[in-house]
Length: 423
Ligand code: UD1
Image (cartoon, rainbow, N blue to C red; front, side, top):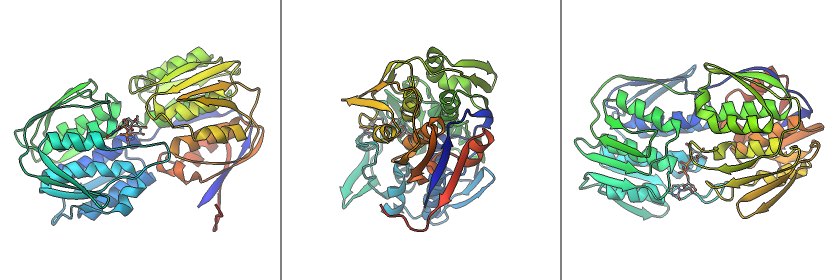
């Protein structure tokens, strides 16, 4: 347990190399359950969430090694299909092992994920999708117990394009030999295309990822699959916003620029200069941003996972900005913390109204969730004076080598270890 001490203001300048995507690694690791032979996954970032997923695979009985970004996984000799609360509690994405486990082994018991700080995040779409495929589901004492009885071909229409439900149902359907599943109103995020590529490597006939309709003909053909995870677009977006917000100049390397088109449009509208060269984006900014009106939406819309960081950036805009959060309506825990640093932000339903101030001032603040904490780190670099960001451990769930990467950009950031923390 510790906190970040950051001294601002600073103009972040230099190069930053992007790691593999957390949100692609987690579903691909969960999907490795369905393979009958060894799989090798490359470009996996060393993050707490990835470690949690690896712990889950090990608890199932799979043999997993993780070395310099490469994960090697061998199937379980005698699988254990009960996933304890202790592991699901740490990360919602753990729930996505339920379908692959029950589809492959006939039964599975996985703790129901609890609430989380960014708001209510139910798993009803996951459960009703599995039921449509013919699985029997019961919820008892906080656990979901699934049984494979009469699985059948199904057409599932998601009420909303949920990323997790789309991935969970794709992976589950992949196991069901000879059974056709269609997922309609599927989420279209790049991480879903990455998962489809991995499932194809396992021999599954699957198409449509990246569009709203995904078709799966189940059946894993035993193959030694090898897969390389795509770059983390949210990590790339966070550094791009940090450079722009501190009126810096830098290059984001090893990303897929098209994955962030909605961000680039808004940054340009705010006055940021961008140059694209294959998998490198050059960013420079030398003034306070123009105000923006942003509607957060599922991909290809502006990502909810960059909303807090963008709010930090707009807190010093030359006018009034609006951000409407349409994915997680109450994802605004960073607002109070940004206010502590001098930002002027009002909330009205799921809209944040941000009156730009000339500058922020350093303050002690609290990280509340992964992306909110990233926003506070950016704000601390923008602010005059010293900031302490407590509960910073959230950041290690999603940003590989964050201290080193910001130091390379000239950020004055230290992790201060504390033995005892009084809440
Ligand atoms: C994933 C990402 C997370 C990102 C989010 C939205 C991973 C590991 N996490 O989370 O970083 O912020 O997508 O881009 O990839 N919903 C329901 N019922 C369900 C499932 C979802 O009502 O059964 C709702 C949610 O409350 C939310 C919306 O659907 O309002 C979208 O959530 P979803 O796309 O499922 O998010 P996650 O997959 O949990």
